[in-house]
Image (cartoon, rainbow, N blue to C red; front, side, top):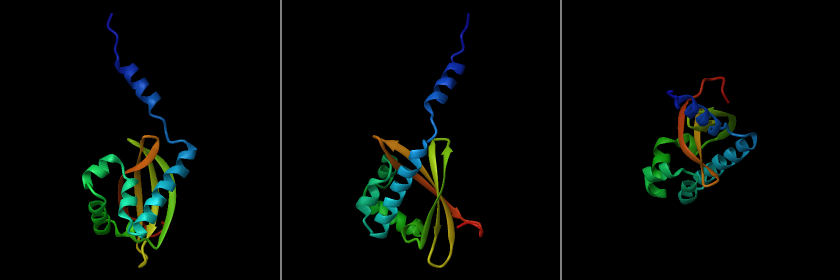
Length: 136
């Protein structure tokens, strides 16, 4: 008799992969907000603490991280307006949608991939795109 482990493995994976709980949205938004405040203060050391180990390894130092943010994410570094959207479940975990508006009125939608590290939420990546005119 041959037993397939594939259904068992799938059931186990689904049981372990739990969507973010309602309280997680507040905690996740607090982490993102704290990082944005650190960006606004140019406190790169503090901002770096909210990044996941993968992101920290990519940029190595708070200064390297700061150069990347200033050069590639000015709408997050110096937003005129920020608003939290929905918390969604992505393939690798929770994704917090955030809306940014710049001083000149440009609008962006950011998808923050979140990761639980040692009992605390960390930002594991951000994907930003220009928002449609009706957003924000």
